[in-house]
Image (cartoon, rainbow, N blue to C red; front, top):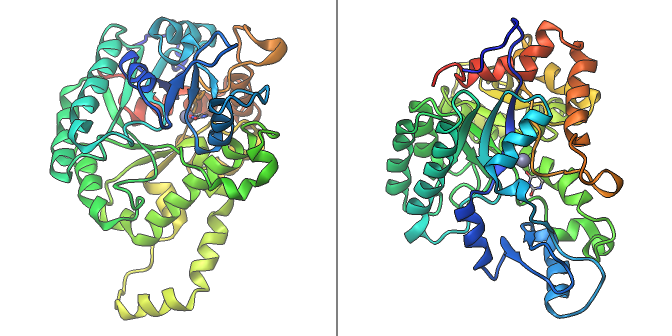
Length: 389
Ligand code: URA
Ligand code: ZN
């Protein structure tokens, strides 16, 4: 464990991604997103991930020069472990809980999913083992594998001593996270005490964002700022409505980007349930004498939120939505290597995206305060057992 000279608890980044070299190699062989590709007139290969990046990709591939290339430059921040360690020391981060970035293993054919999931997990385990006390990871699940193989994969993660949970997108087995067929997976994760780090990728349909966005005029703002958080909000609300949290009470989730918009919308979700005639009738029919569990209770009992929300207003909402001891359920993160400095700040050691999240914690909880330190790392150490090798 990273021992601090004083009694200050370590700074932990629970939201920090990498694409191991094996994953990047796979992306360079692909013709559909996600892919890595070099374009004429640009030195860096580009990493193209999102559906929202398709219009510009098609333009670039058809030879039409719009002056704007699709995706983002694939810098060494995405795949290099030394660069991750450098980023950590430049930002005073003592421990990182690494995760594969989106879209994880979602696009793999069923036949190779498990073996590639093993390759990626071993790669992370090796990186962590080489940096004792500094690195842990969330494993990616081979969701396209046959369910028995997927279920057999989960307990094997317990043999990887630095694995502290799994990172999960919102598609599940193809039908979302309220799919009854996914229940055995949630049960297996809960039984293994592996929390789910839920992370968006698919966003909202491009049509929602309009033609100017398709022409690239708004950059990545709409899909990243709005599509991502709505996707997370919808996924968790669907899980809640389907009763997953009641069916698997020992399931624990960490929601990316402070739960998307869940803290802000939880009251409205509750009110819509309360005023829904269909739901009321169904509840009566089920003859449940037990009081219905509210989304507030689920947030307080089964959900943790990261603190990747970039403002004091959002962070306050996230803490308030997380119950009486809300500040014990929030965990600092950076989303590195995404949101690097641009323009004049390019090449800066210090990333503004990190500073915004750190400042929000200081503003809401007080610089260096006990609770501030909990959010900056103490909570992650406790929840993810980062004091155990
Ligand atoms: N963009 C992505 O594709 N993923 C992230 O995690 C953040 C930004
Ligand atoms: Zn992320």
